[in-house]
Length: 315
Image (cartoon, rainbow, N blue to C red; front, side, top):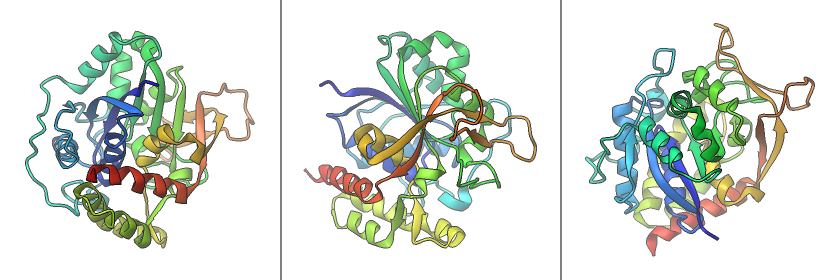
């Protein structure tokens, strides 16, 4: 079976970096057509550099990386250095990567790639604010015919919000983009805080990753060792939620996750609850299903998969 064609749209961020490693470790399952970056956890000039650094560390300097939108569709930019550090990937040393930055804008790349793709042949994996994806849809809605599925990290239901009382960070940064993506009419699998808060990077799990011993695994452990500091204080938990890799893990091992077809609506007009994702989990409205909402994960199986895949880089 041919690998699934994917575009990873991200804002690295330590957890985005781990999602990239997981995808790059899986060439038999995932054919990464390109990595597009967006402003989110840190500004665009850092997210594109961080993505290229991950390609270097993983020995995948052949993967094309594109810089995209530097601000949300409507709002002013919001970043999260207080979680990810000034570089976005604090925990490892920053260097100027060999992987080149492509001259083409990320939105142009997405539009061009999907225009030239077969029907329902490309999966989009947005792990940051969905500005690039939404901008591409706005430019040419016909590209959606080429989208097989969108697997996103964004939103929350029972877990409330992690940047505001009612909004998850990625959706809060660009709620108008999230609204466009979730209502686009293509199949969407959503990884919200309800499931990502179940995959905690405990000290034992981080040590297990470190013990894999290769450069990618050590970089992952170093980044997670920094990343867990804020959330362990915030939540009083044993480790930080490892949000973004859930998207790639679902593509590799959907059996690890439980999902339910639901309607998801994004609040775009309220100053109080901007970015809230109203998930109709119990079907109490007649709004049509537009997402598969992920609500449960086998956390040990998730970390087994992550360790198994990171070990590939030692071969």
